[in-house]
Image 1 (cartoon, helix red, strand yellow):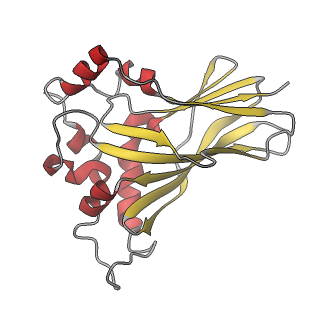
Image 2 (cartoon, rainbow, N blue to C red):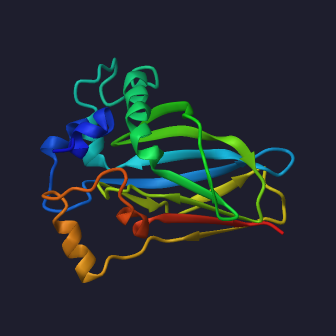
Amino acid sequence: MKRTRACALAALLLPLSIMRAEAHPHVWVTLHSEILYSADGAMTGVRHAWTFDDMFSAYALQGIHHAKKGQYTREELASLAQLNVDSLKEYAYFTFARADGRKLKFSEPVDYWLEYRNPELVLHFTLPLKAPATAKSLQLEVYDPTIFVDFEFAKEKPVSLDGAPAQCLLTVDLPHQPTPAEQLKLSQLDVTPLDASSAYGEIFANKMLVKCP
């Protein structure tokens, strides 16, 4: 049997073997993203800030040394941040992009760190594109193929453009809400889990769309 999600995501999902509920998802993330551009108008990457739910954050922090009660410095969380990004590689960092319909490839994360905003953990990281992309239509999606983690756009300014040409227009598309039949399937995923190659989670993607003339 393939590894469970609790095993596969190591530190990010390490405590979840004792958090398992009756149905997917098991972790909730509030999403902020900045789509990055170079001076010549090409997209160069995306910068994420993911806020984890307070229950997951409390479990993830168990055993992490900290000098002051109720506070964690970036340095104290550095090893956990490293393990997070290492573990997310198998799942393509839950981030998928297309430029004029062509799939884009990301390099490994840079500038990654964890922040503690009591009572929640926030994972910050930047995904550079392997090659800058110039396109009239850019689509960026964030979702978990296995639906173990649920992503939701932040209520205020969930997505922004950093350095994009002034005429580019940004819109966001909220995730599809599951039908009763889909909700039933979600309830069965603990027994028959999906793996990282599954395309099912894509229907619940958070979409960022950029149109440039």
